[in-house]
Length: 330
Image (cartoon, rainbow, N blue to C red):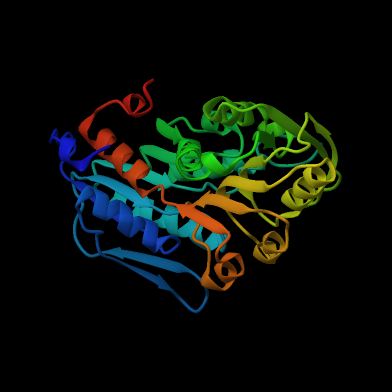
């Protein structure tokens, strides 16, 4: 993914990058990788909480990418994304791609009980209706979310970044490591981690007992006694499931415990909860920015890997009409 290998094939005019307010540092890193400037725009919130967007310059005929993650405040960030997309559509952009490192409402992906919505489908519909021609996202909570979109998209994973970090920085200190999937829903992706790290795998079986963020860890399937454990998951929200997972593997005789996850949502007091756990280290990414007041609790125990180069290269390849699969030898 070297910038030196780039060539120009302008299908839609130049690349234009716009950023919402949710992840400014990640947006700047992507712009730096692409060697372009973030385009100017005004983002105004009126006293009634209505949002207003105005572009500083025309994007007529251009290939436009809107970078906006949809973490807390979820509805503010989602509306910023939708309003910016519509603004670009009304200004006659040739193609608009929604670049959403973390896509909200990923857990609401099916009707698993009567009289409930499939909100992930609604979010996909809104992005399309706003005017997006394409979308990009990383590690959605459920694979079927790809099917909620009728526009083409690039659904990427940042797991290889975590695997590379472990192999390059932690491997030599791991004793008989084993990957543990935080729940059975993450079993398939957990197997991918285990295959890439060449380790055995174990699974935590848990059951969600109410319509809230709480779940009850029930049992561990697999052996962890005397081994270093790498607990993997797609995201950590309140930290409740991870607390149970760490306590369970320690009860079963695990040696050192490491946490690997993509999206650091860290709602409420999750950072404090993680900091209090008997874990060796946390490895995550910057799909969601961690506020300084939360990050301070994890100082010295967390490594944050940037997805900027990954997203920047995919944006470049989409713009030039080149294969994204080549990046992953697919």
